[in-house]
Image (cartoon, rainbow, N blue to C red):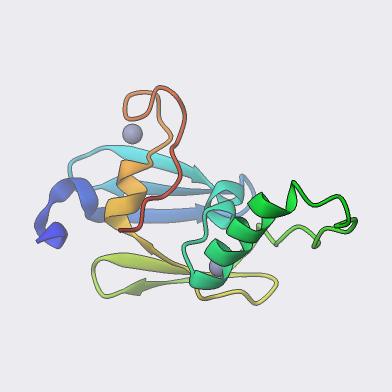
Length: 124
Ligand SMILES: [Zn+2]
Ligand SMILES: [Zn+2]
């Protein structure tokens, strides 16, 4: 079970809204700092994944002159989903993104985990 793995189980989570980061201290002692902007850009909900797919396709469409306003990167709430994930609520009301801890740990942006920078969240 992933939930018994100390690498993917948080000991402490701090969402620092001033600094714009979510810090996770994992049970194995490692700390990850995820920029809220990055978390929103990687929102794993079906709607956002579909929007990202559409946005990628729209680059080739010269008639698409307007872009949606940028999504909120301000967190107004957070709650655990069982022991395996955290759900974030953003100030624009978006609250369907559930971030599994295993995926977050795999995308830890620190140079020791991902020297090339944080990879996109892998959900499956
Ligand atoms: Zn979303
Ligand atoms: Zn790391």
